[in-house]
Image 1 (cartoon, rainbow, N blue to C red):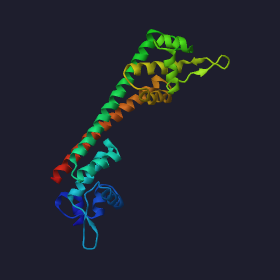
Image 2: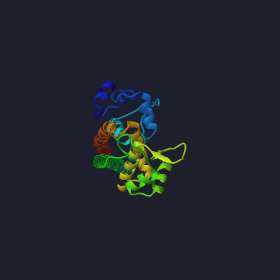
Image 3: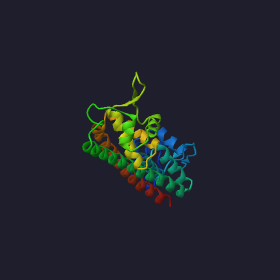
Length: 247
């Protein structure tokens, strides 16, 4: 009967930890850990102290496992704990934060794509130090971007641009990649992004080896954001099922 219950947890049969674990592809220890963490409601105990679960526990476990891909393990855990202690509003707030983070990430991606398009257009319209093997110094680059040299020095201090120093004069020398980075930072600053928000994006450009190879990274980034969006929807549906069953 226990095996039948694991295949049909809505049947009302009592479930052993192993039944719940097998139905979700987990170990029995994982099920016990989830209960101890507050992810599952507390299990009833037999006269001999063994845990017994019900369809409600199976639904809770399904909800948690569906929440993890979109929210991450810590937030999914916090959501389930809140629901199990009767704090549905707290759970909804946590879910809203995940959606807000996804929206912020989408806006960041859009800003990067806009900046790259703007940078590409600028290079096509005004070839110069950013193309070929050209190099420039802080004064001409600042003038070209409409900035003060002090701004470029601040960006260098933040690690956003990394010009080398001429060994004889000590002057900053901006190579092609440095000019590219400065232009990209300039575009993003115009978009309202803070230096600490821009830093990881510049790191991605450097890791990709330039703007053109970054297209693959941007495509992957978009795909991952879409996957997160769908995962949030799936998690919400499973959580709603659990909330209805809890009553």
